[in-house]
Length: 533
Image (cartoon, rainbow, N blue to C red; front, side):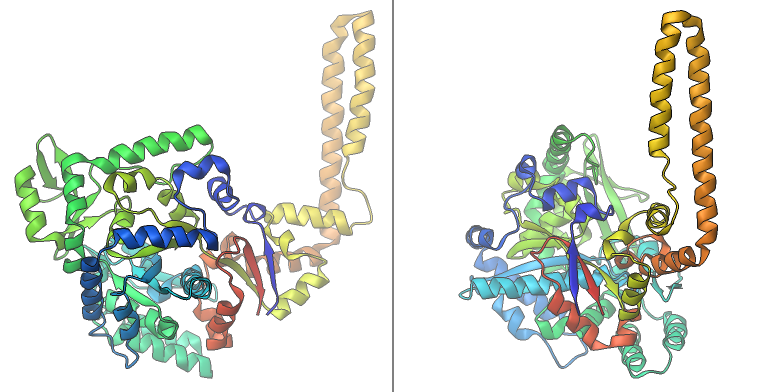
């Protein structure tokens, strides 16, 4: 499985902010704690060790033991769970929405990056233990983002009316989806493996959180991965002081706004990933998930009749901490409060909003984790690699805009020159001489000279386009093959990892596919991987 790597900056699908972070731009240092290299983890776990108490560890172990109690598998990760009670055990964490079948491929890349980083840390710091953790976003509510996936360019979708947090959604009406997708898989040995996995995950578990835990555990449980559901009363109780701070002082709003100003002062072109609300909390109860808002001295839950004063909302918090759900601004703080975590591994969009949060963490006296961009990859078959060679293309060529790629390749293969740059330059030089003559004779001719220059330059451009069109027609077969290959590798015009579900590759290669990814993806190698299957 040969691997090539190219810079994130060369693929045009990653933001400037993340490219600058990955390349360790000095001006960004105020936005993070430690840069992700292996040497910096020593200081990170020493700082986290002093912060994360034995009481927190005991609560975490008990909560995870309870969460895994209903997992229908004989391979329970009790050893990994119990190890979290040891002061020398730390976590590295990634997170993801509860997408049907995991959603796009990068679901796998996140988890494998996390598993491989834990292994690398153990190799470099053998006296400590490092547990990879997958954080399920069970408290999210955007069903439309998670209810589908793409397999062989077809969209498979789960349709139902929903409200509240997605983790508690019933899987009882997934029967039709399971049947339709199972038929699409065919009858190969790997197809039967996938069908069994889907059946056990979505038919044998009553809600989406339990189904997702089973799916992820079936794929990665043997690697020591722990799956955590933050929607847990015992874990939420550890977070009470920070929710209290949010309700009382709205500290996140103040800190994030100041950081946003700092980001723009570093580079005005940086995109602000998220904007903080005055209160960054939701209220969860049964099928309800609505924002908590502060109006003067009152706190209310949107679209309900629930209203408290400050004393009342704090009483509700202490009695029912599970009903208070952090939004995108506060969720990272919650994660780092309840886990002995060293590093968060995420995609570009995630890291962009984490980079807005350091001062908020400092105000709450919680250690800010090391931030690592997950591995990214393009998967190419041997057959597609042969097509590339026949088209005289390198893999890096494919990351151009499709039309720019076609034009660039036509220039390479055509026998005629279809770049009139030199002719245009020659024409401009001639008109420079005409401008000089007009100034010396009659300046009223300057307008006429300018008009003639524009007319002739436009004529050259028209000839250039017509020639390109004629060349495209002559090389129609080449262009068709090029476009077809580009569409295979960049479905829907975007990155494969953001579109295609892992099942498409598992169907062909089985478990070997995931094992190959584990061997080839190197988490601290901050480049885009090209993997030939």
